[in-house]
Image (tube, rainbow, N blue to C red):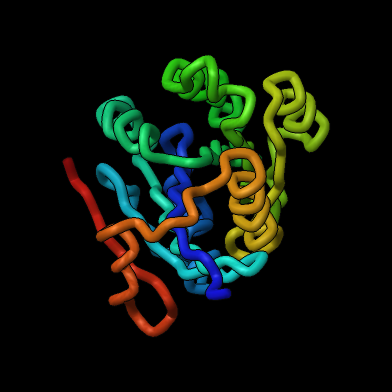
Length: 207
């Protein structure tokens, strides 16, 4: 039998300031292109990359959206959430302010989740920039917060590629397990394969 094909949409969401060096954009680029750059500009509106993934006999087109973590673009993030299969909330372990802001972002996310889907909608918490020495949030603090909010916690370094593949693989496998992605081809949505040689397709929305 031919491997079934489906589309997944993952949303990177979190406080403003995380979109700088080694932030959400860097995580996305490291996962899709195995590349890190310190010259990231803050995301305006939303940006996305897509990657074809082969996992458990399935061929998946994984689309990853990176949203601007500012008040101005929160409505855009909310609209993107409605089509997402998993949300990854990102904060900077070297910034206590970004960690404290997770509470607000998590509450906003829960407002979008229907009661009947809440138990199975995957939420991951990512503490990024663990390669830096000026850490302000301990592993214990972050793990406790994530446990209290019934979310899975990961620590990553986009620069060193630490745990980046593992985070996205967890998200994909959890969606496949809990939400049972539609195995039928998505009519137009999977024709994203006109992408650069690295296997990525980039789009940008500055709504």
